[in-house]
Image (cartoon, rainbow, N blue to C red):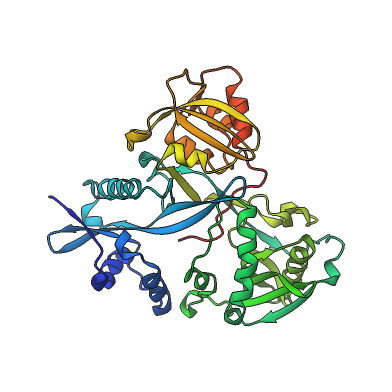
Length: 410
């Protein structure tokens, strides 16, 4: 069998996307959901794998801008809509598509990173993607957990509004938050519709999406989007608040929104969607054990151009080190790189000097956003120290003062 990779013709998007849905279980999407993904698909950056007249594989790229440590924004290729039909597994289709994507990104020359979220975590490591962020989820017993809020919380005004009418105000808050935390995506036109997508068939008994705005000093200073799933038993109401997303510009507005969610009538549980692992609400609650916090891998990062990627971020501590990088899937990255940087910026150039650290590009991707410690990777045998003391120095420089967080998938 020989497959052929072709750039996606917009006229066959429905067939192409249908094959993607088939590979993910074959459940049809709501029309409004498919319509949004059709609008967001960059057909010129999407490919299909063909076996004769049949599409047997799909893969696409989104043109993203990603926040990195130091407050910078870096162009990144968002790998998306990857699938291989069950009839064509283990025949090199996925590898061929990954090869084509990274070659294309390198040839374009303006995206030093590729990023993705993985349906299965063991798939993409062999292509150089490292698990760089985690999301936290919680199921909070709001009947028994109390909040201690900061001064000024009572001065924040809360206002309930239809989610669709508040998109512009929410996006203005979100845009101001992007550079405050690595791994957040600038939402380009069209992407503002994703957080308010609310197909009726996917609510599973919950209410339509709701929105509350926080206002402080005469301006919108935060928002929460959520739904409520009612439930009753012989003892009374025990509904669940389903938090989709929440952002705020100051501690008082942030606390006011969480207090509101805790106090919604006829509910006793608050279940969060993906949140940062260092989300401040964990320091407002009286009993963290009754919040059932758990974590899961989220964003995977792949350095397409090691030098450009390492130059694109800043470093928490001064660093001067030679990194010996292995990258069998993208051999143009292999070799020794001298990284010199601090909080103001960095340079990264090829060198023949002796290495200070040895690591693979997968490990470099995992550590790139500052959420995975190079020291931890070394403890697992995945990073080797060639110069005594280098590991401590480089690990401190790569660390981020706040945990990286991807607020939504793609």
